[in-house]
Image (cartoon, rainbow, N blue to C red; front, side):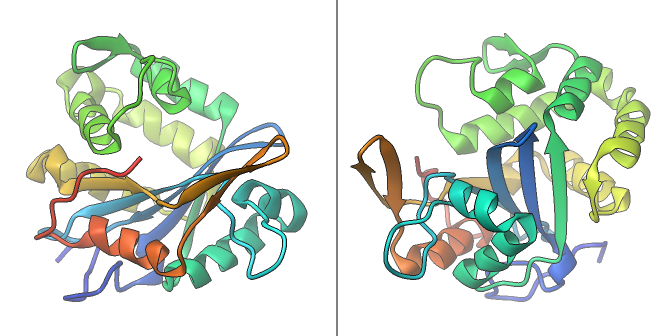
Length: 232
């Protein structure tokens, strides 16, 4: 066994520290929130994209992920997501826009399918002008990271991670994840977006997520025998 451990039938990693919430911000603006479960193979590394417009209020007026973050802060949002996914989240990583751009500059051009792009463009979603399959995207990105031209840049990336990234996820976990992908292939990654029904109230968009959908989505990406189409 390595750094990551799993429990048969469990939707996420046994150790809370292996359940990682990832925040991406640009100044005061929240740009993305993602939950990643770092499991030991054959269990997949499960990734759940959390729409910023998903309502997470307990009752009454809808309050989106983004609004909750601005009103209550990052720590409170993590606690609320623990309740919704019904798992402990022991690790977090906070990517700021300038650090993401530094990672992107170090990596240089990346190939996703037939498209030449960059890490920053993948995060921004600007490298393609049509809806993208999340599963294909994360696996293609991971595949591009396995090339020898990227491998030699790992020391630079580690330096940026350890000096500029806010969070408590140890660099050993990040490197172990890279080794798992290198040994198992990008197919070890499974990613879906939390589903729901979208509404507009005035000029605001909301996604109403059935209570059971949070944990169901998590189970879908962390269960080896399931091969579900990535949700949009």
